[in-house]
Image 1 (cartoon, one colour):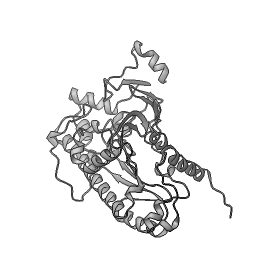
Image 2 (cartoon, helix red, strand yellow; image 1 turned 60 degrees about the vertical axis):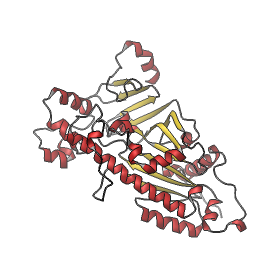
Image 3 (cartoon, helix red, strand yellow; image 1 turned 120 degrees about the vertical axis):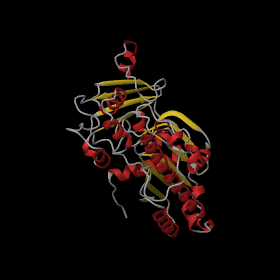
Image 4 (cartoon, one colour; image 1 turned 180 degrees about the vertical axis):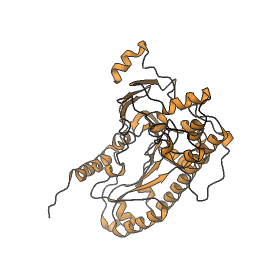
Length: 380
């Protein structure tokens, strides 16, 4: 019986076909049904399963003193050993949903937030024998649940755009502990796949939808807000341990997995209208409404520490409440703090240009440098 499909379904089917084609030999060839010993084999003969772990609030590791992350994230370290790590991956749009572009109508699609939901989904798929694309939504913000061993906040490297205070260090440590919770969840999901005899036939992708929930990171086009982790473990473990340095888009996984990432990625925001072009050397930002406050309006009057901690709208509503935000707002009047507050919340020029190789935290705007006019013209 014939049936019609909508544009999104057509795109999804095309994407699924592309995924199999560009990964050359990743999906096993169909086998004789008589050779399928169990439901897991029935799934595995149809195509490659996909598990996408999508994390909120996990930015480029160097942006939050996270050079020691591998010590505290054993599952991520394992995935890096067994898969590909994309060192220059960027979340190019807040509106794209990665999982929706990966699987076609022949795939069972679902999502969830915990291992119980995933276990129930796997049990169902083992009964019906259908390949799947499952998206796990996780957050790097710590919860009230039991945390792993506490991190030594004094050992963290505070990024230069934040005040280096014990409270800020504690906030950074809390975010890293939130990542430990994500890491532990990922480890349990891998174990479930292993027990179900599906790990050898499943592509596992770990990435983030947004960067750190910190001033001058959250909801910005700087690296701390858009440069995200991207780890891909292929069923064959092809490319195990390889680090890909090319600039790629975490929102366009087909080009990424094909290792044909573009020479640049284009990013944008809509709430504060701006766009950016990121190459291996430069970040160019065009702010289309420089008269607006990029992080939300400042407070109209005096604010209390309680209000800043509990009410995002008290000041600079685009920045989540936290120790770093409070330190910047409460500490106004100190020249050093005023400089950091300006970096995080001040109105921005129409154009910004940063050499990310010499200025990894994008602190020195080179847009007015005559020697870089040609670069501006090329990227603008």
